[in-house]
Amino acid sequence: MSDDPRTAVERSTRAQLMSRLRVGILAAASGGLLLLCLPNMLRDWAVYEPAWAQVVSFAALAGVLCVEGVLVVRGRLWPASWQWPAVGVVVLASVLSYSTLPYGHAASAGDWIFGEATWVGLVVLLSRPLPVHLGFLGLHWSIALVNMLLATDVGRVAVLRFATGSVGVIGYPLCMAVTAAAFRGIARSAAAAKWETERVAVAEAAAAQSHLRRRQRFADLDLSTMPLLEGLASGRLDPADPRVRRDCAVEAARMRRLFAEVDVVPNRLLHELRHCAEVADRKGVLVELDARGRWPEPPLPVRRDLTEAPLTVLATAASWARVTVVGGPDLVSVNVLADCGPLDLPRPATPGVRLETFSAGERLWVEVRWQAGTSPR
Image (cartoon, rainbow, N blue to C red; front, top):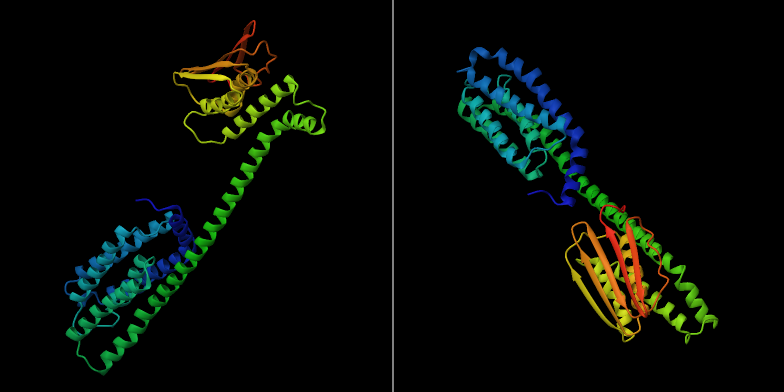
């Protein structure tokens, strides 16, 4: 299952913060393995019984560090499904090494895995909570303690040597684990702040875009609606004048279409035509609306051209109007027949939209047709 966006941001931030810490721990673990453990193992080569067990343990730790190197180069953390098998490899390497360690060599230079396994385990578990580190360190220390009790003469010197070695073996990796835990807390806080910043930025951008679209929609009304309202308010236009009443009906239909443009519906063209027809219906005009076929959704400029002439006819109809929308895979046609008489209809502004009219007496037939693919979106 993929991470949710907030978790992904937190993981990315944590990886960025811990990248240098991982490089430092990997360098310390690799340097200790090659510059300290390998010479000590070769120096005591003759006393191991059998020696190949130490080679296998050494190779296992080296393999885990190689995997960590690849992950660091690729900028990835250890996958959760890999971590426990890798920890199991480290623990088994520790047990195998101690099983062939000669009597009396616990916490000595020949006991090279005592100080190295904790660093390799830290490499694998760096992204885990602090209690997991404590559990691993305690397990490894317990294995070393059991080996000392069973394979060494437990005296004052041996105990002091083991206790002194434990300070560095447990203390230094534990300090790194505490640092990693602090980094995880910082990463959570930074990710939360980053997420909130992005959320606010997205909200502000969406609000700005919405405001811009709203201003663009209402800008078209400024050219026609505002002069009409100003004329009515000043008394220059007479509300009883049939021409003024027709202009008011047309502007009302345009405003209803404008409000319908923001609705999320399956068929926007039909939805906007229904809103335009409601203006005629409120005047007592009998309106029939029929749709046939399926067509691609036209862009907003095309829909405005497809509905501009029909809404003018609907707003001007005297008693009846019939609207038919016919479409196909690449064509949509809006036809209107009404008893409104001849009209001077606005011509389409979008390339690819064609307007045809035919009048006979008081009847006017209008067709607005759009061919898909001929108008830019």
